Amino acid sequence: MNRSEILFLYDASWTNPNGDPVDENKPRIDEETGRNIVTDVRLKRTIRDYLYEYRGKEIFVREISDEDGIIQDAKHRAEDFLLEKGEKVSKSNLKLTEMKRLIQENLLRECIDVRLFGGTIPVEKSSKEKSSITLTGPVQFQMGQSLHRVKLEYIKGTGAFASGDKQTRKTFREEYVVPYSLIAFYGVINEKAAEHTHMTEEDVALLLEGLWNGTKNLISRSKVGQQPRLLLRVVYREDCFHIGELNRLIRFHTEKAEEEVRHVSDGTLDLSLLLEKLAEERDKIQEVQYRFDSQMNLSHNLLEELNRLGIETQELIY
Image (cartoon, rainbow, N blue to C red):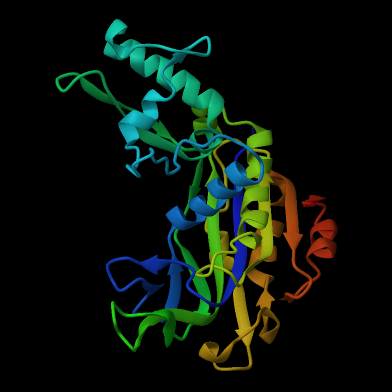
């Protein structure tokens, strides 16, 4: 496996891409720039949910409750993987180091999210014997940020039910949304860390599919209205080399005031700086994998430009 970089753009329309629980669950906004922020944790949740619900892949980080609604904690979740030859092993018969070895082996074999993103997994044999497994994920994303300033809208409405017993008034609901936000995420795939988590190219292919299709399948009330628009993976020939921060090499130009943008077609994505950098480093690039939405206006014909530069391309088809 070679090092590679990911550039992923999606947009959100009249929804809350990522609420801040310590600020009334409002969409996260950079107060200095007025741009919308989405955490890497939110993006990874999108990928995890897609792989688990639509592709049937086991993931470590998921909510599991018992019959009383008690949510499983991380150390008990880890013990779900305390198996040998498919059979549950009692931790009372094992040393702490043996517990860690078995859990790690099974996690890496069974859980695609651990192979992709790593994690810190608590392991507890008793109240006096505790440790953890720390795995650095090969796939790391920066925080996502909109390519333009956004407007925050406050919406208030009435609910369907009364506010209490013998009440004549209905409850009120209130929420904050962004009318529009075109969000860019940048990520790196570290080939050295992949050796430790046993991540494969098949895992990476599922990651990319999860980015695109997982975003399309955000169909809850608070998340519906999000669409993938552009996905690039730049794969390099050389070990330990990557261009870096591909998201800073693109611009979204619009004739409207930035806060008035309501659709991806209201502007043009300028690829000039990105193509210049790809041209400069083309001898180090093995291929560029790509997918883009036809409604997005690009400053250049991406496929033609890459072919002109002699860079191999592969379309991602989902």
